[in-house]
Image 1 (spheres, helix red, strand yellow):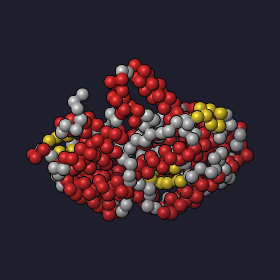
Image 2: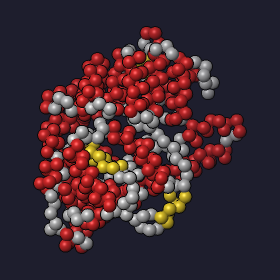
Image 3: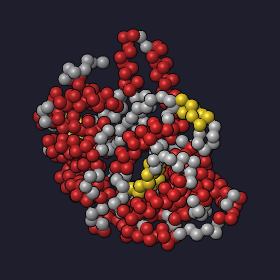
Image 4: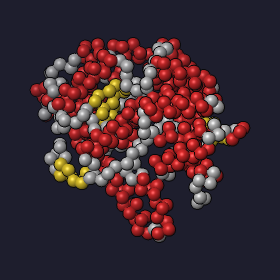
Length: 449
């Protein structure tokens, strides 16, 4: 991360700094042992217990939900999705997990599950599905990941790999070098929220598809929704590939999955293919979301341009979106980010404040508002935003770092040093550690390497 020194030694964040700081925290794990897979009934190596899966979920899921602009404020929509999700979960292999089903305000097309049962569905994908059968397939698929413990399996493999690397390092290190291993040990098993959601294998996806169809059938839904869901995703991948980038990263897609679902319908679920698909009930439930669709389309275009750092091209899309939906939280936060990217710090702060008014208590706007104030040199105000953010959504080490930057700019070097030390203890060598370590070394808190 590069930060520019200005008059008085104060720091200001560049556009790249701003974007880099919009990430979630890391968390460590305690090692477990073997466990019975609830789907297959086979014993397998699993370094996370069920309680630890829930703990990981509780630690990470709130950060992901906030990164996706928070849970939808459409109570009717959330209640509908939650009721369907819980009905499916009751017919799954792990009905006792603390499931929660949330529609989030993100515009990209995706759904995801954390290992303890928190399941998020973006408003982007809700707009693309046509009926309840497809939604049941989507939710059933995510419940399948939870039931088969796919995230825990992947985390187990990752921890074993890290243990191997760290063990080898310890074996060759001299006693004088042992302290230098502390950052590696502290990051043992450390995975960001994004990493927890990333890169299911094709085998995982096939198993989750099969389970999704099975749970839909058990709950009285039409399993053919899985066929419709995959057809829609393949079609969207051709029409709007940028909107599905994360979906394809977290859920590898192929025409083979469509064919497999069709085969399942022909062989296993032939008697169920005439069940109702509840299209009218679905469309009624997303009625308010459909009214937002034109604004969401503009936001998607703006996000596409902003991802390419073409902020001037993104701005008209966000302006149009806000003309269509002036109080939409996602649109306001996106415009704030865009304004910062254009170097318009006051405008960025203005839109972030409007976002805070639009969705009181949602954390992302607080972070954006604080970063905008840092850009303006309003360090005390920025610091208060970061303090409030940490109260609303604790556990993000970036907040500690940003508080440290604010304190440094206010001339409170001792307090800033404490924050930078705390930040380094949490992230080790990742994130903004280079800058934090540099300042601590310059101040004599740390010895030069």
